[in-house]
Length: 212
Image (tube, rainbow, N blue to C red; front, side, top):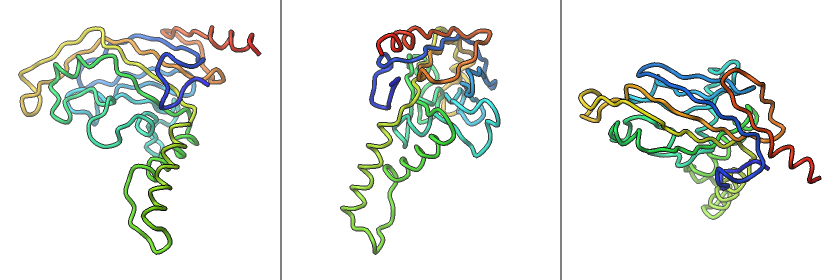
């Protein structure tokens, strides 16, 4: 297995995909890697970007964003937010590197994970059919199932940045420009297409086949 929510970024046998990029304020960065694409999305972010993985085709369908459902915490500040949300200063946001995140691998897994997060994290009104103990057990079971899903792992390393401390909301500044490297780990059966700008390392998967 390549990874789960509880495994370290360096664990597991995975295909390693690496690429570099640059992005300027209010612009999006987008890089396909097979059926998925990595995106730095400025549209909802506060003076920066949100780290996202979305389907390569029809990315806006059903608002499917694959990082959010398997990268806790599900409330408040999150490593996905490379911006000034939650009172983070722009200069501190760019220092928070590397940023490790998780992502599901397809639409079916996205719905499965979203349902498990809903069961495991968010409160539900007590019904006549279930006691509080039963709800607690249901929540624990959902979180255990979520943490066992075979998922992809990602790491965003900020190599250089430019911040304007005089702009942005509440004196927090704004991130004007980023230079970065992204490494993605996906399961050996993931369909990665060789593409310009992608460095693809399948050596761990080759050694796995030799051991069987």
